[in-house]
Length: 540
Image 1 (cartoon, rainbow, N blue to C red):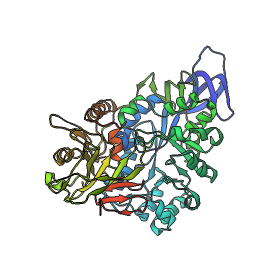
Image 2 (image 1 turned 180 degrees about the vertical axis):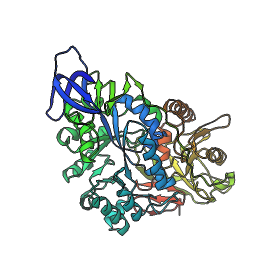
Image 3 (image 1 turned 30 degrees about the horizontal axis):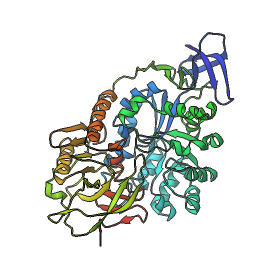
Image 4 (image 1 turned 120 degrees about the vertical axis):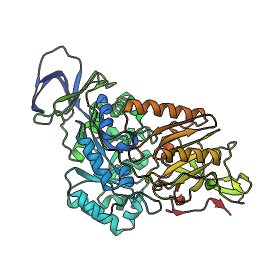
């Protein structure tokens, strides 16, 4: 097979008319050639950090869509399914991913459960990590979210890092806002990346101290604008990633979108492609070709180097997508789940109080971090209730692994004027999380999730919509087109009910993520991410 076009040689920063000859899945030769082709041939895109589960698609269905956007590989943290099903969940992701051409590179989740302050469906301790690190299908130790454990020399945390080092596998970081001596110690422990930088100054400090900084642009967390100006100088130490990307967004584009935006800002295309194609392969030692003679034939053909419209995607020499059409076939799989809680009653969401003021989570659009604010209580018959006038709404996290009392908090900026929304995608333990204007609406939404053993839903007095997520309660067994369409309709309903957030369900899913400050809610109670301990809802 011979593919002709303008060859983009990232390593030598040159573009020339040529052709790529492929034989037995490898690049036999790259040579100059005279032809009239205007298109460009370059290495395929790599998402340097993504939780496939957040697309609500199993790996095989995720692959179907992303190859049309020129993605040939991912660095994937199966942390979400591991928190539900443990090592069995990770094995499901690996085996399902192997059945399609896209090159999934899974890590060993380092924080299952993410903290001891929440209920998860599984535990993976340092002995479990040791065993996983010996598996050639495990490429790295996934994000070490327990940065306090690193800073305070927690034996279990350091043992996990040691097992990765002993197997010559990189260790991913997760340290939002960590600066100064703390970040110096975190890096010294052997942690080599961070995808959680949300300011230029933070990114710069971490780069100067030797870390690889990932520019993240997902459905909820968007740090591209904050960090992109670092790329021209630090292009050899930066990568692009999604982290979490919902199915409707994934249908529109992937890493190709970040390349387009970066080039539009006037950044040298070779530096952009270094981050998008080359750096993840080298850092994680991936079996992914970089358009060099002898490499596996993993490359893409794009219309131009401005918009990066993908015309063809090749993986191991096989054409897997052309002009937006995917040739990745459907894969049958067993549906695994872990849901062990009964339906709730309205009174379960009551919070008896006489406090005049309460602590409130302030959600920030496009950010995973939250603020801690105070608000005046609204009490009806001794029960703390939602205040739609001030947009301080009741929120709950319900343990899905046991029959426990729901945890209650209040949140600002969801904007709902009617009904409730709920999800069993609740990072990181994936308990049920819901927010609504009344206890009745919250109960209705939670019970809909329990009835379907997982999903995302919206309810009001006249309608209810749910996107079922039967695979571990966090992924669909449907195609991206089906789930994307259903999810878009659900997103629309949430916004019609008043939400002003760009991605209300993605934002909701992170309100139980205790490792990101400042105020969050677990199934065990309200949690202060700055002091890393529980706090009270009521202010006495």
